[in-house]
Amino acid sequence: MDWQEWKKKQENTGTKELGTEEFPNEIVLELRAGAGGDEASLFAWELAHMYEKYSEAQGWLWRVNYESKSDLNGYKEASFEIKGKDVFKKMRFETGVHRVQRIPATEKNGRVHTSTASVAVLPIRKKVNFQINPAEFEMEYSRSGGKGGQNVNKVETAVRIVHLPTGLDVRSTNERSQLANREKAMLILTAKLQQLEEEKEASKHAGIRKNQIGTGDRSEKIRTYNFSQDRVTDHRIKKSWHNLPRIIEGDLTEIIKAIDSGVVGDEEEE
Image 1 (tube, rainbow, N blue to C red):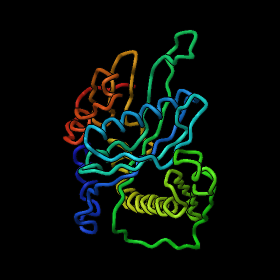
Image 2: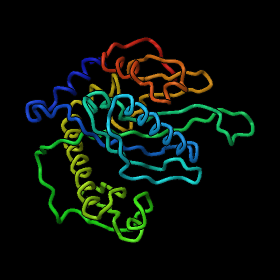
Image 3: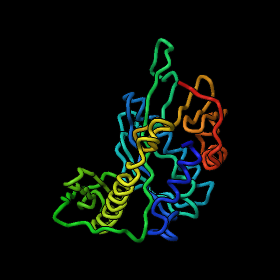
């Protein structure tokens, strides 16, 4: 099974149940720094910047749900809400591990470092085929450290929900009220649980897929951003693009079109 065949199979999974919600116009984008310490957190911030700029170019609405920053103002982890036409259709293949290779500003000996950040794209659907048992989650409240004025910082508006059976941890801090943050956190938790159900279904076919094109999940390395060679390589379709500064500023159109086409090239980067 090649990339194009797998992509079609993914698109057809659950279509009968989802109907017009196969490609919803709302997603939650999650980023998390991986291996590489401060450099990984800075890379996670750059990925968020890249997607924000791409969203602006597409005319999509971009909102922050939650941010946890490093000492260098990078992202340890962050969550964003994106709304707009075809947002899930265009962003659905961004899930996975993104790798950066470059000389960090703090590197004294000129050595190239490799760092990673993970990306997850969660579609927000109006209809879900399961119910969350209130006894299965814990809810915590705290003061938000984000924007929103003095009221947000004085009142415990930030919400954290832990789903006990799975250990899923969801936070929402940037709404102005506790109720709004709780509703947003529940929306994201529902999307994560829906994704888990879909991944269980997809895992039935994982044996063939993993051997030939990878798992297609957030633990798989999908793309490398090599700054010294001014090159971005997508490992799934074995294609590369140049002008990295332009891409980091949100020029993802060619990359997303190429992945959607499913045509596999012959370039690879180890």
